[in-house]
Length: 265
Figure: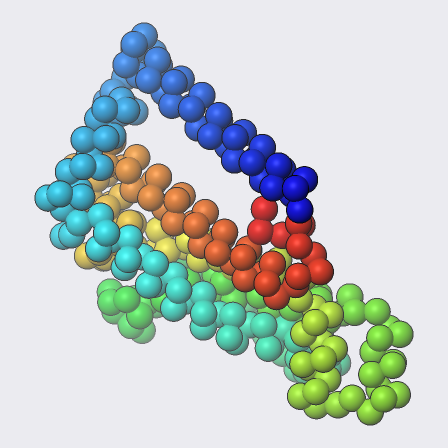
């Protein structure tokens, strides 16, 4: 336990040191030496003023907290639906050859289509409301959850499956006691990829016709030629993405305690 705490402390120290170095280089290059024009990349004080402005007075139809919460809500809904549909579908395709033969052709056809290519169709179907953005996030998060769940089942060792069959383990009991536990490492790998894809797609979806959200801040700031506000929105996206990934890592650590120390790092 002591070595694990020491390792965590070192990781935090290295991370803070990296942030400090970046901040110093940022200040020197934009403020002290003027290597980078503030018109192209804001100074630290300009970014701080933009952050304070959007918190106090708001920007792009709302204050920062409103935009962050709205984006988190969209990601949570799209990600949750994708996981609820994708993981069981991947488990089914991995276990049943018939299901794979029936579903795989359609999946292979849809898989190469980029999630952003669904934006026009989503707008036609659901308009410019949140539903269209949730649909695009769902499409982006759906594919990794299916692929990794499928791979997880196929990676379960044959003797384990044969032992389950010999013991008469079938149906829901087989899923609960064999398929899910054996596939968990790959399932969580897919969830991480799905979550990252959700945030990437969210920003792109919110650039079009969104009144609230971090993507709408980016869109409005680009129109206003406001680099400091663009940077604030980008940092918020990064912080939100990293925070949700960390939370998922905590869930993973609790779901697989035998891998403690190798997850949620």
